[in-house]
Amino acid sequence: MATNRQSLRFGVLLAAGIFLVVPDLLGQNIGRIIPTNEVVLTGYGTVGWTGRTEGDKANEFTASVSPVFLWQFQDRVLFEAEFEFALQEGVTETGLEYAQIDFIASDNVVLVAGKFLLPFGIFGPELHPTWINKFPTSPPLYGHHVSEFGAEPLLPILADVGVAGQLALTSGRVRFGFNAYATNGPSTDDAGVPLPELELPASSSDNNTDKAFGGRIDFQLPPFIRVNVSGYNGDYDDQNTLDFTTWSVATVVRLAGVEIVGEYIQTRQEVEELTGISTFKRDGLWAQASYRIGPWEPVLRWTQIFQSDLNGVIQDEGAWQAGFGLDYWFGPSVAVMGGYEINRERGVEIDNDRIVVHVAFGF
Amino acid sequence: MITHKNQTIRRVCLGVGLTLALYTTVAAAQDADLVSQGARVYGNTCGSCHNARSPLERTDRQWTVIVNHMRARGNLTGSESRAVLAFLQATNADPGVQALAQSADDDRVFEASDAPPDLGLAPTGETLVVQKACLGCHIIGPSGGQVGPSLNGTVDRKGVRFVRRKLQDPTFDNATSMMPNFGLTNEQVEAITAYLATLNGK
Image: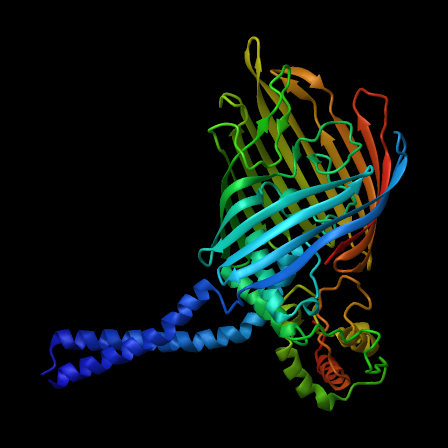
């Protein structure tokens, strides 16, 4: 009997310990106290001026604002949306950059649903806000706004409607990130020859039964180096017969105060020809270096799209852009940015240089 | 009579109980270190994409939402997110109000001088250095973070005037400095300066 009472005491103590500690363990895995129904407005914008060496509109003033709404309506659930309003060439462009629900499934996993920026590369999902991008224009590999680049961009800043999951792991100072997603995918209104124009901007409707799939594997040793590899694939025609694939390698390196960012992107698009299905291949890269000197930050950027070919037959010679920029930072998220672009299309005499100056602000 | 089975049960319960007690103690110590961890994550990981925003920009409640937004956008772990949030809320000068010590309306008159610091204030300064999680970003003594420069010997290298000015206004020499403005009083600036003056360069 005495032994049974001793065992019982131990059991009570053990139970008390479990009830005291396990909720804390669970609390750490769920998240600390987070207020419900909290709305935060943030975002970014620009006010600027663009001057061109050629074209009907030699120079123009520009303005844009991208408000971001964050709504925390439950401790594990966040709704976020970004809109864009931009005035360019006399037209006000409006857009929904993303509108998504984030569900914190565990300490390492977040699930996303809605329209979201695809985790592809670095610039699109993370560096495109105007106060984060250190050059006043986007790299012309990405079709985002008006560009004087002498070639069609390889990709827009990818966003699509679907579901995604992300896994984050750390080991000491090393960080690993894994993303996977399924979305409605690309489509096209033009099935003509030789090259149907893809519509990659997100649509809430799907023109075929195929979904696009993609993912990213990311490695970081912050703040020194980051490397990731991304891939995306989906059928774009109504009959699920023509495939679009793109992949990239992106990196960020910081050494001795110099920051170097770069991406290499390749795209492959199947095209239906009279003789069968051909593959249209394009690839390009951009690299940017910057160095902070007090509030000043000079920036150099190089972009190049290489020759494209259709089943080995050269379609165009490609293009390149050299960018020279200088930023003056008034604060962590406010800067005047100036950039001069030298745009050249290979094999063509026309040049489309331009100078862009804007005040970029994040709020 | 104590049977072998009962002895085994007792030993298991004792072991589990000791483990739980140890965990509770360690967890409490880790909370105190969470702010320093958060400073490191904020500088190294968040700062790898963008300039670090001042903690004073948002209230504590707003930071909880923004950190969750960045957790999804920057693929942070839960541990990293909690650490960053602890850092931002600890260094936010006033949880309810967006304070800005260097604003034009600040009625504290501060004149950074070259006068030698009162070393008698060094113990107070050492306490403040711990409270403000300076070790999260700076090497102080034998250890610390590497987001910012080592503070060992900084008074000798930079001079007392620079150190006083930096503590009062972290952005006076660098508009994008991620060092928070802690809204330090004159006395706190003097105490921290005095403590840093006792550190030899390494």
